[in-house]
Length: 120
Length: 120
DNA sequence: TAAGGTACTCACCTTTCGGTAAGCTGGATG
DNA sequence: CATCCAGCTTACCGAAAGGTGAGTACCTTA
Figure (cartoon, rainbow over the protein chains, first blue to last red):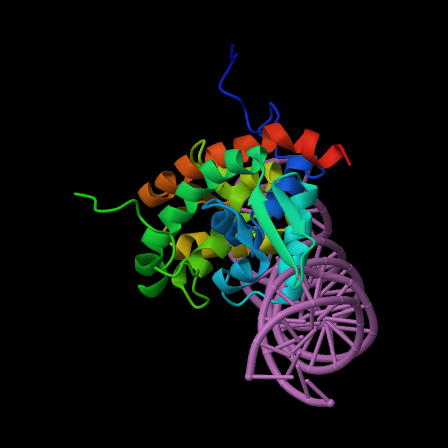
């Protein structure tokens, strides 16, 4: 049973500075975090796939972003002990929950970007 | 009539580097952009209100963020020529469209942040 | 024997982000 | 007469984000 429409801030409407949601939001909405989550929303993918799809990402940033998302329990890492190495990344249940909200947002941006950015 | 479920990337699944949606996404998901859009989703607000609600924001960043969002046609600025000055900020139609997608995302983050961030 | 493929890590360096502090306007208030 | 208010702008500086290039491991293929 839901009480009131969840307020996103405290009673005075303030989004508090030290709030954990600020940190989480920073992870999710980071430059590369969005793209990785988006890519993984279509299913399990390998390191090299992600690297190719998030065009322009460096290996350093890919590793860092994946680590952060894994620590947040949004992405799970499955390393197979084969040679050459093979590592599959996928979304956790929690990650899927999030991606369901993230996808429409990015879709909207994708659709509106041309008109917004190029008409200046 | 819609054809296929909008792909968010090109056929090969690549999110292209120079793409305008990357830029727009950066504006929207910027550290302060999210919070400002969120705050304004509850209606018109003054400079000083926004400054108070987005706890921790500096005047410089507030100005910069608002300018960017205004240039993107997401926020509209209404300056009344009174003294002391009074400036109201609100979302444009486009801004509301976006905030409708942004709000559930932030709500999710708000609800899950404690468990995710503090359980490490 | 040499090169290549995969999934990384590390050290270094540059660029960008963002904070601080000051200044400005012009009338109202003490 | 000085201070305060709101809503900014500017100059300066430190921190953090992020890119580059090299190195690593191990087996496979040419």
